[in-house]
Structures are given as structure tokens and as C-alpha cells.
Amino acid sequence: MTLSPLRDCCLSREAREAREALRISRGIDFQIRQERKELKFQVKANASLVRGVDAEKVTTLTKLHVDAIRSLWSDPGIQECYDLRRKYQLLDSAKYYLNDIDRICDAAYLPTEQDVLRVRLPTTASITDYPFKVGDLFYRMLDVGSSYSWRKWDKFQCFDECQSIMFVVPLSEYDQQENGMKQSVDLFRTIVTSRSLHYTLLVLLLNKTDLLEEKLMNSHLVDYFPEYDGPRRNVVAAKDFFVTMFSALSPHIIVYSHFICATDTNNTKFFFRELNDQILRRNMECVLCNSICSAGIH
Image 1 (cartoon, helix red, strand yellow):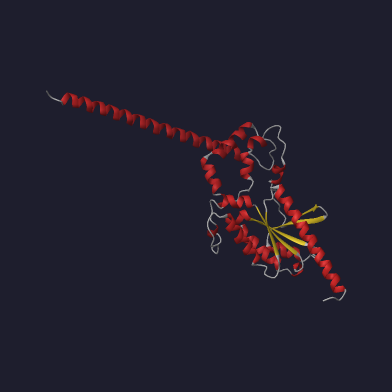
Image 2 (image 1 turned 180 degrees about the horizontal axis):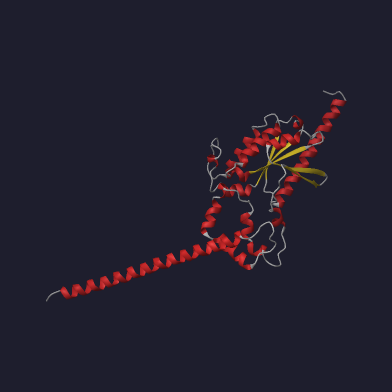
């Protein structure tokens, strides 16, 4: 009895199964290529649709635009680009608004407190002045573009009645293409050497702690500040480093440092209460000192 027919039958069956497996594999590969091609085409179409919107003039978005924005934002390639946002200028609030695109574009939409707080308006002036009042104290927030702008402004301003200077540092700008943190350092150095500020309470306000924590997961501080010798992805160590760096610029002036997230209203309210108390204590110390000097007591 010969086994050739049986062997040939087994080989024939194996060959058929192999051919079928190859056919299925090729079919799957073809389907994947088609889906990728269609997805690429859809992404391009959505991008073209969104780019056609005049952001300076648009007041409402159609459902077609909303669907396009939502689809783009969920695309893995877009998310990868977002993680690399340090390489280009992107508003910090972009993620917040894109995550809530359906709510914001709803016909019955009303802006929330957070929606308003996260809006950023571009300014063309070198210095923008924002006066406001908290309790019994008046504040003036100055958006200063550079140390040159500050020096130009400082020549014509009198700080005799200024009780406190708040210097706001955006912690999230340490890894941008134009290192905003180094610009803040240059401006801070200019301010603390100003003769008119020697008797002023100086408050260092380190803002955007939430974004700092998020960014440290993807970009390492030592790549932008080689002198940093702390552990990577460590928020506490990064905060300590920044406080030390700014404090070293003003060895003859006491700097009160605070970490805040300006969009956290409770956090901000707590800070201003603390600041008001510090200013009041400082005023009482000055009054007491003047009284002692007037009485000739040493």
C-alpha cells in the first residue's frame, strides 16, 4: 500500500489553507490601506473646511464645522501634534475649548465663568494696564512685553504710593520655542534693580501650575535649563527650582512667592486675601517705624 495519494491530499489541503490565509491577509491589508486613504482624505477635507473660517469675524459655527473640528481633535495625529505644542505657539486654553466644542457651539450656549477666564485677547500695545479693586485695595495689572518696555514705562511712573508689586510668571512657557520663562527672568531682573522699588512689597506669582504639571510629563526641564539638577517629571522639584532662580536675582529684596492657577477662582481668592493681609501688616510696620523715628526712639 502506498501513502503517496494520502500525502498528496494532505499537501493539497495545506496548500489550499495557505492560499486562503494569504488571500484573507491581502484582503485585510487592502481594506486597511483603503480606510487609511479615506481617513486621510477626510482629515484633509475637515482641515480645509476649518481653515476656511475667518476666526476674527465668525460668530456661529454650522454643524458641519462642529463635526469637522470634533473629528480633527480626536485624530491621533492631531493629538500627537498637541503633545509637541512646545515647538510652536498654541494658546494654553486650546485643549479646554476643543474638549467642549459641542457645548460651546450649542444654540443655547451661555459662557461660564471658566469660559471667560480662559479667553485671551491679543494686544498690540507694548504695555497694557488693567486696574481693578479687591476689598479696600486698588490693583493695577500691567502686561509688559519686554524689559525694554518696562524701562521705558518706568521713567514716567512714580512708585512712591505703590505698596506692592506682583510679578506674574507663566510656568508653562519654559519649553516654548521662544522661551517665555527666560524672558520673564530678564524682565524680573530689570524690575528688582529699579531704585523706585526698594521699599515696595515684591510678590512673585508663579501661575499656571496645572499646565506645568502636564508639560513636565512630555518635556524635561533640564533640556531648557541645564543648571536644573532635580529629578525629571517632578513638579515639586521644578517649583523649587524656579523660586530659587528668581529669588537669586533679588538678594537685597524680600520676595514673597506664591503658586497659583489663575483659572481656579477659589485659589485666586485665597491668594488675594493673603496678599491683602501682607500689605496691611506691612503698612502697620511702616506706621510703627515712622512713629518710633518721630519720637526719637532708637
